[in-house]
Image 1 (cartoon, rainbow, N blue to C red):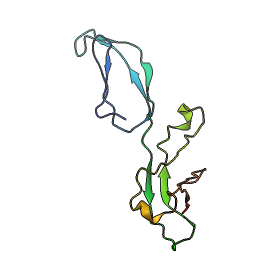
Image 2 (cartoon, rainbow, N blue to C red):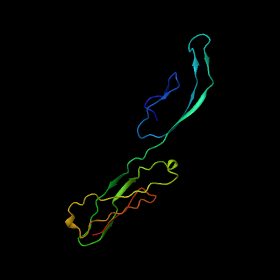
Image 3 (cartoon, one colour):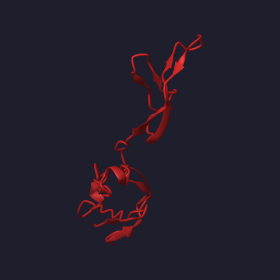
Image 4 (cartoon, rainbow, N blue to C red):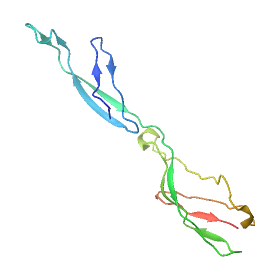
Amino acid sequence: LFLEVPEISSDGTLSFQLNPKTSGEQEYAVLAIDREGQAQSADSQDRFFKVVVIPVNQPPVFSTTNVSGFEGSEVQGSFATAIHTGNLCEEYTNGQLQKLSFKIVEVIHSNLFATEPLLTIDTGTTENGCAKTET
C-alpha cells in the first residue's frame, strides 16, 4: 500500500505516502517509548490502528476488433472486448456496479454509411461486449 513505511512523529502525527492505484487496509501496533536506550526507560502498552485506503474510480479500458460487412447489409459483430469498467470495489458503491456506455466520437469515411453507425454495448456481467452497427 505504501511507498515507504508510515512514520509517527513525537507529536503523534502519522505520515505516509500511498502507492498509486492501490487500495486495501493494513493494521499496525504502535507503542510510545520514554527515554529510549537510557536507564529507566518505559514503554507504553501497544495500541492498534488500521489504515484503510479507499479505491478511487479508474477510467474504463477496452480493446477493439475490426468489423466487416458486405455493402448494403446490416452488420452485427463482436467489437469491444476485454472491457473493464474501472469500477470501484462493490464494498464502496453499496454493491452497485457502474453502468458503462460507449460513444462514437468520429466517423471516418461517413460517406460509406446510409446512416451513421449505432454502437450499443451490453457489458452485463461478462467481460465482453457486443456491437451493433446499422447501415
